[in-house]
Image (cartoon, rainbow, N blue to C red; front, side):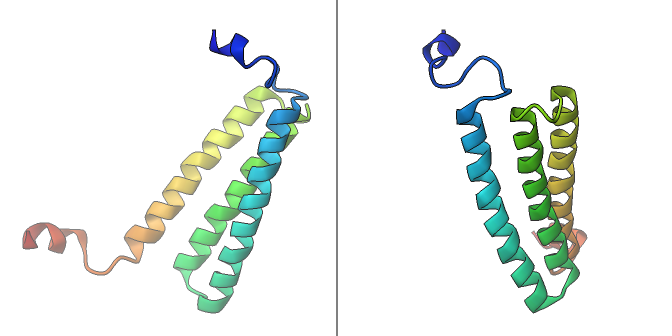
Length: 114
């Protein structure tokens, strides 16, 4: 029922959808700006933590490009899912590693102090 209610906005297929392409374009512009900000932060600090965060944000830009390619019919849906979910995992792993590896103290100290 929900699909029928919104079928006039979003067509049932992904390929060629102007609404989805607009959303992906907005996401691409937003992540592109964030990527530039993260690169500036990395250039100022020059630490591996900032490099990891900048790389993770850069992967968000790649996700937007893959999404646009899917909507335009350049990237097939199986490739889209494989690439995007792989990037999701890598982004989360990089951010968590950047936080964990550069956090003050150790995990065992914080557990025993409680």
